[in-house]
Figure 1 (spheres, rainbow, N blue to C red):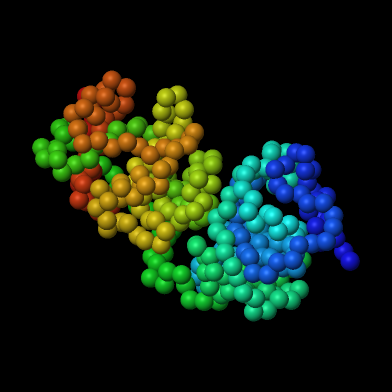
Figure 2 (cartoon, rainbow, N blue to C red):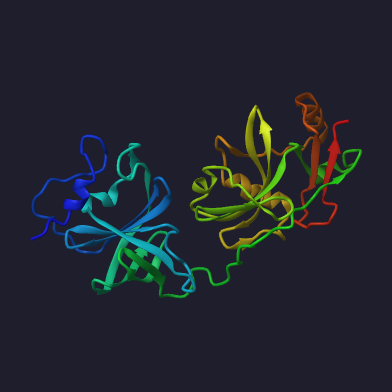
Length: 323
């Protein structure tokens, strides 16, 4: 009988990787009802979808994860069978090793088999983040597709915008009189950048709607979300940094009509902080922000009405220069 884990073992050195590498021998007997989805930050971010079958985890790599709408199929690249112990693996595969990068468990649970052939696999998943009927079908060689057979997870979800007309602050000489009605941020003096991220697949636009470069690694940090961010790329502490000050769409919900204060709460909940990006701070003392901007050599302070939706062309944002 063929060694189901021979290919798996041939790609790994048990002395160099923390992954489970069982020796040759009889395969364990299970119930053929365990599934796991692992978020894998390798050379390219992807999700590993694994189903227990005949003593191994039959595996596919999903570049865009599991679809949650039957109108969209996702690529599923069939990979080598993995040992059952891999269902609980999470950790860092060393750089230079096969699949090097961080592995985390994104979801796991049980499943039921409706059909299993060499070309088609139908299952019902029961997980914490993914549940419902799915089918994987072979298209060409190792390339398969995964399709959700049930209705959309969020049938009322708002589509992610394809482009954004960014709000631009109006220049004013003085801070607003009703300071309690505003939040105050630094004007960073950088270039506007709108980032669109769909579970790690990202693209960006500048203030004029032209394609722009996404900060390296940001897509991976947003891998669990479908999100649209607004901010500017500026030199902060001698490093080019994407200062993120707004969120316009989050996981199927449009936020354009939400007040600025609520959008800020949702943005801060994302806890975005990296070497090349961070959440821009917001304060309630405009005079203090303006004084700090002057001291740091920044161009000014931006005052944003706390109750204002995201409305291009409206005077809800004000830029007050330091001079």
